[in-house]
Length: 419
Image (cartoon, rainbow, N blue to C red; front, side):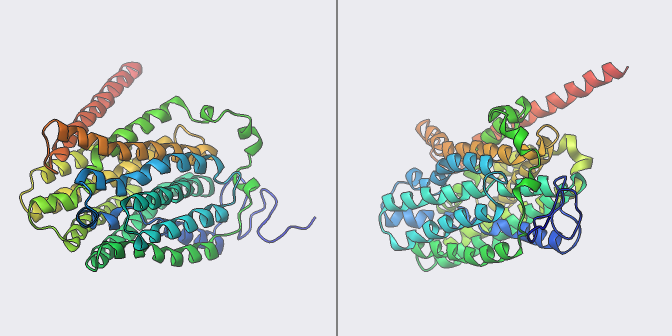
């Protein structure tokens, strides 16, 4: 019986895909790893746009809290596409098609605002852009947990996280540069995604869906939500609250700088770049150290985030804002990596893509709710752009105390059982 290229019987070990979910050592694994590291470069999220928010607000005569929809509205449309992407990834759609479809959506709708002068049309394009990002988002986790053995996953996730933040650094700096020509030019950055898209498609092996998900028939009989254990929803809830509380640290940067009379697209991009640099370093470090820190990784993430936002909320100049942004970036990076590695103990690997989609959807809801959250604080008289950071720091600190209390109680109960 003959086989087409890269379509091999389950269990046959070669330089291509093998059974039992894992890819063999060799050129195909190297190409897959490089492709995986380039995936984040396809999704140019909101960071480059943030530096232009104050200019968009002034140019289109849009209130400060309303113009933030340019950043938060994609989170709303991502909810649907994250869930859809999590259901079909590696199961009903090949990995290559899972890259092509959202990439085209993101490139076209991401660049389109360059040609518009209507805030309504700008929001329409941003909403469509969110559909592309959401659909692509579960792919990275699905590849890691299905095609890499357990002992390699933490390292791959850490390196992938570092690559994601490295792309954010470059795109944020470019956003500051292009923003100097006018806010329209910031959106031309999305054209860059054409290059990594082509490279990823060339490097990604032709992976048979049957071999990636050998239990597909059994999985299909399960209900959608029965595939996720109850404990996974605890992490999903944490992701929702964490994103809502910490998102103002990123979105409010240009407005905080305006309050301090030092705002410019270049200055905003510097603050955001510090956030992404520290995120990149933290993501890489925690990927290698997560086994030793497993029980304390989530509290560590919360501690960094709380302290970072507290420092930024009291900033009276650029330096403390840079420090706060950097610490907050460390916390956010550790949180994302820790949740995916922790939940792998409870969720079967063929369902990791689904969990990733649901978790991302919850985070998107949190990001979208950030606008309502900051609006509520403004109605209560907390009108400074730094006020949400102080309130969020308190909220994250409460989460931290809850985690620490849970860990201590669990350790005491475990000691009683072994005594």
